[in-house]
Image (tube, rainbow, N blue to C red; front, top):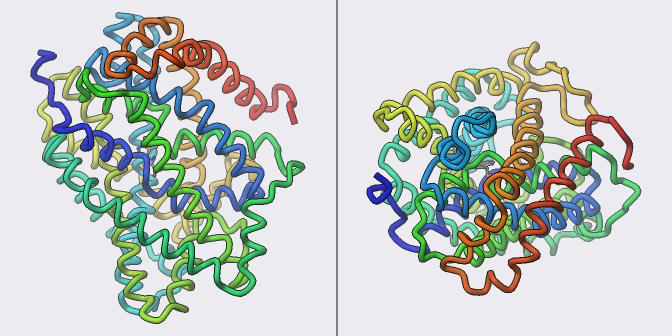
Length: 450
Ligand code: TRP
């Protein structure tokens, strides 16, 4: 059966699809608001540290596991360690995928709505817009529908086509905005908030948010890159692919901050705004530029598409699991999984002022996340669950499958990898799981690092 598995039609197609998954609302919407809430530059520095020392080596492990086994995460674990409790890690990934999709789709719906809001000259008040249950749910439903239709089309035709054309355009637009935002009066205070670290601001919640954001942004910790790796041919170079994906993903996140903070400080506003941040700042920024509403509309088109290449990937994990393991028909599963994510997402959609119970959900302490339901799901699944998943998957690859076998898989197609093989093995076996473990314990308050 393995020979028949669909593969990426080209190397560049694979990189764009994986980068398309990584680059999304996580970079442009989530990164700046989490950075703002966690004190700015010190968070950014920690984030970069985690991307380089944990995210990238760990990503290679996910790719290797996927390419070796040619399976979804659950199937991959099963084929290396049959009938073991390790399968639970794969299940956690599938559930996490649905949970992330559920709130991600809501924000993607807002993004889509803002295409029109910009086109009509920013006529909506953001707080009223997100508190309008009908509009928000319709936009959310629409976005899930588009995602479903694309995943329906299969791997190469659906996913690659979209990511290839539009991501470079987004990069260009962001670049222009970085330059513009930094010419505004008063913008330099924003730049210094963003780039001058104050290490006294580092607390347990800052560390876990930076680690979680690193995994979230690179689409790691739930086996998505295992799934994408399973469509990868042996000829491709896992090491350089990982470096490209990491580079573009980080570049876009950093650029988003380079726009948001200078603009925010120049216009006056609150850095710890939360999920609303970009929807407050970008429209005001566009309003100042001549012809800015047209640019704003295009910006939200591109952001919607960046979000789409991510929602596609989130849906792909539960779908590939059901198709591979349960031998279900792909088309039915795609619809079923998307509908499930939609249902789970309804409380998040209603948690921004329309239903008080969800708006003031408040189960997790406010030091870690805002009281609304959406922020809860984002923290529990987008930060904690990915971090826990990455902890177990790194142990699985490093110790159960064996770091040496994983390294052999990576060196197929990558000659340079042999130069860093020893370091990589050390990272995946010791450094990554130990560091994650310590920070998780620290978050639970079991002992105090900070
Ligand atoms: N990385 C995406 C972003 O930054 C979100 C995402 C897509 C994701 N697929 C994922 C996060 C899988 C974790 C796991 O917007």
